[in-house]
Image 1: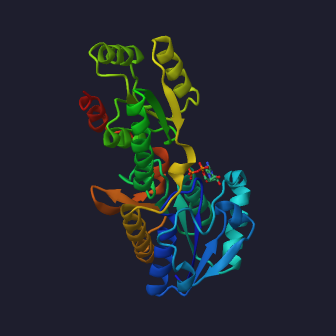
Image 2 (image 1 turned 120 degrees about the vertical axis):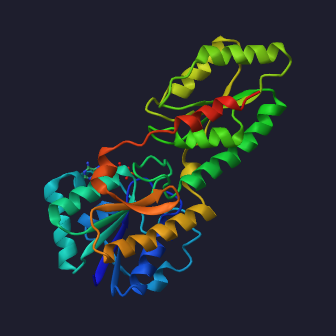
Image 3 (image 1 turned 30 degrees about the vertical axis):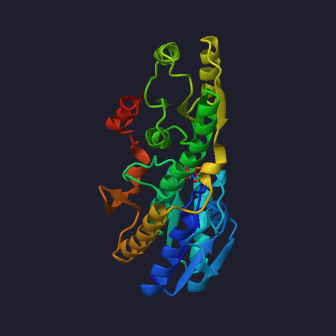
Length: 323
Ligand code: ADP
């Protein structure tokens, strides 16, 4: 391979920049002569918004959140003829392979693209949600968990001072990975995730008992955003009916931003370097990921057809640790 390109796609995540840096530097240092950065994900690819990268163009980004290549959603890329046009744009520039950093939607686009056009693609899991099958970890998850924890530690001060219950909604799309880790690590009284039913009546009973025994009614309930956007409000409403006076805090997009944690910088750097090695070793149509601490390759077909389930033992810990 003499010429490769990189894009970031879907929701941004802290650590995409160290991944771009690692891919660029590892490519040059492995003898690849040309590295291109594609702006705004698949949207930049189909619009030929592509720039040449140098080893120096990725200087001083290892610590920065977001993505210097920008990210976007691009519905047109779901059309097979648009993907053929995109392949022509790469071929016309002599670009022989593509690295895609993004979530499961981006991996779906990546798989279809390589399958239909024959241009080799290697994916890197970049999402705060940690919901990508085949990899135990994703670039940005650790930072998002830490950002949420920092915020919740502050909220807890007010919860304690005012003896108040807070419902804190965290991100995670349809999965409860962020909520579970955040819930355990912030000492939440309860964690609500889309994967498992929760018993609101039991929660109300516990809270009533605590009040009756003089333990106060302060506390944190972590709620994963889930498929149902009104869930947090509904829980609050039902708690009000039970005589509680809960407050809602939706952490929102602060979880997607910020300087990547040491863990995410390491993950992004190691995955980026490995992705280049896999490409040069002849691999294609794969995502690099982590399995029990080791970097592995996962066929993109597996990534996009399987679902990643929340570890039940881990989730059960959330219920084992309250007073
Ligand atoms: P994420 O990658 O974070 O899951 P999205 O689901 O929005 O984010 O996907 C990002 C982009 O990947 C989409 O805007 C689109 O360009 C591409 N993509 C998603 N699903 C498909 C699909 N089924 N076919 C082709 N491209 C897709």
